Image 1 (cartoon, helix red, strand yellow):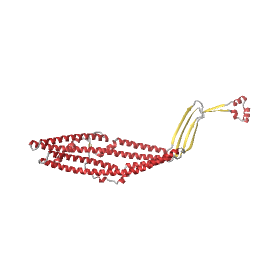
Image 2 (cartoon, helix red, strand yellow):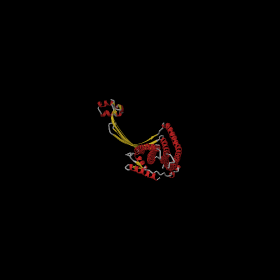
Image 3 (cartoon, rainbow, N blue to C red):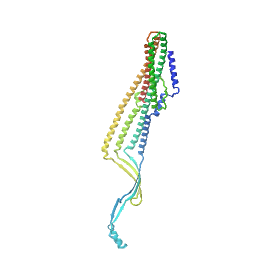
Image 4 (spheres, helix red, strand yellow):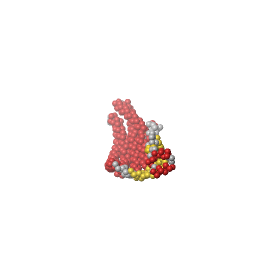
Length: 448
C-alpha cells in the first residue's frame, strides 16, 4: 500500500509539472464562458430584442395615426368644363335695365355662349390625425399579446441556457473522465514497471520463467496503446470545449472534486417544482396567447370608432384655399361576419386545444421529473458499487502479488488482477461522470 501511495504521488507530481503553465478552469467558469460566447445564447438574445421591439410597436397603436398627403398635377385638358348661356340667365326686367345702361353692340355679346373650364393643373395637400376611440379591444389585446411574446422569448432564453449548460457540463465530465483514466493508466504503468523489475531480477536469478517477463512486456505495450488513445481523446475534448465555450487556447486543464455527495439534498416536490419550470410556463403562455388571439378575432368583427382632425390646402380654382376640419368615423364590418364567425370558432378551438395540451404535458413533465430522479438514484448506487469494487480489486491485486512472489500463483493471475483493478477504477470514473450528468438533468427537469 505504501508503494502505491508513493507511485500515485509521483504521477500527480508529473501531471502538475506538465500542466503548471496551463490555464485551469472549473465547471462553473466553463459554463459561464459558454453562456457568454455560445451562438445559441446569442440567437436567443436576438429573439428577446425582437420581442421587445414588437411590444414597443404595439404600444404605438394607442396614439393618433398622423398622415400627410400631397398632390401636384398638370392635365392635358381641364378636368371640369361647362358652357354657360348668359341670355338664358338674364330675366326680362334685368334685360330692360341693361338696355338702358349699355349700348346695343355690347348687349349682343350676351347672346353668345361662354365656355368655362377649371382644374387643368393644381396642388392639393393636407395633414390629418386619427385617434381610435373603440377598436373592439384589438389594440389592448394586441399589446397584451406582445407582452406574452416578451415572456415567451425570455423563457426560450432560459431553455437555451439550460441546454448550453447541459452540453458544456457533459463535455466537462467527459474530459474529467479521460483525465481520471489517464491517471489510472499512469498508476498501472508504474505498477507494471515495478513488476517488470522484480520479474527481470527473478529471471536473471533463474527462479522465474522468461515467459513471465514476456507477459509483462505485452501488458506494458497494451497500456502504452491505451495511454496514446486517452491522450488523443483529451486533445479532442479540449478542442471541443474550447470551441463550445469560446476559449482562446486548447492547452487548458480542468479542476474538479471527485467526492460524490448524496443526491437527497437535490430531491424536490415534483408538483410544486412543476410550476417553476420553463417548459410549464411556456405552456401557460400558449394558453394565454390563444385566449388573446380569440379576443382579437372577435374585435376584428366589431364596429370601430375613431375621431380626427385635419388641415388641407388646394388651388384648384386658381386661388389658394386652406381650411381645417374635425371628423368622426364609424366602420361596421357587415359581410366580414360571414368569414369572421368561422375565424372566431377556429380561435376558440385553438384555445381549448392549448388548455388540454397544458394539462397533458404537465403530467408528462412530472413523469419526466420522476424518471430523472430514478436515474439519479440508480447512478448513485452504481457509483457506490464501483467504489466498493475498487477496494476489492485493490485487495485482490495485493494478494496475487504476494502469492506470485511466494511462488504460489502464475504471472497470468497477477496480470489479470492488475487488469481487474484498472477496470474497476475506470468503471468508477465513468460512474462518477454519469452521476454528475444525471444530477444536472434532474436539476434542470425540476427548474432548479
